[in-house]
Image 1 (cartoon, rainbow, N blue to C red):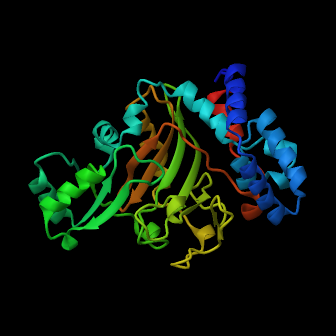
Image 2 (cartoon, rainbow, N blue to C red; image 1 turned 90 degrees about the horizontal axis):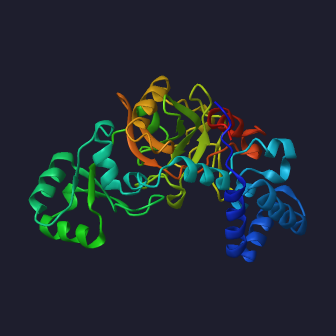
Image 3 (tube, rainbow, N blue to C red; image 1 turned 45 degrees about the vertical axis):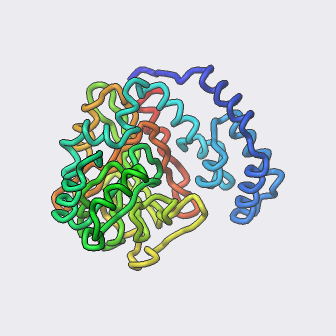
Length: 340
């Protein structure tokens, strides 16, 4: 694919924006984290973090998460970072179509074919429909349409609800307008954490002809309704065969050799139906081809992958060298596919 440089102006805009919003206290807090884990002097880390942000588009949290303090310049250059990812999103995700991904109701309408579960919208006057839906499915997952990073997601059990009209009103008051049937995940995922539906983040780019998978991360929850880090979740990167590359980790320097509740050895995990993933992502990417760079959240069920949501701001999931022993990231793959 021909090179499609991201351009100088986006980088300058990022630097100006970052300079205006810089939180010096936060920088020093992160530098102290790096000092604790890698023994580097705090002043030296602060200087390196600021230099990396200004010249290499490395977010401060990227620097911490991907152990840049222990990497050479050549190794650092292989890592995808959030500022670069954000520029890709701005360039390749058409603003007129981003709303289909931001609004969960709009997303479900658009990608209904790939959800493989029942869902409904809570509106005035449909409390009886909500009750029928709840009694049919038993467990309800509710979402606020514009929630992010797991916020606004709750789980209810029909057996606990005594007044459906009141429950309906409470959902409307809290803005939990999307109600979904709970997903039943594959036994291999449930063996790690049965209390949470554990999602697979597939970062992909659709070039107009084919969807190319750039990186795959397996997220695991801790029993809550979401596997996001705000709920105690963590992740591990998967290799080209769908096998875990390492133990699990998060952005708070927590490392999980085993799942804290189940005791499952994270590095032993193999994602089932991995051979179906590329074809599934290729199909969903064609629905809104104007949004080319997406972080797709998928769950593997007993019969194969189902779609949870798509994130037009794809975010970044990468190898953590101090945990995986892998000192290179996924940026070469991004460059080969997208050409920046």
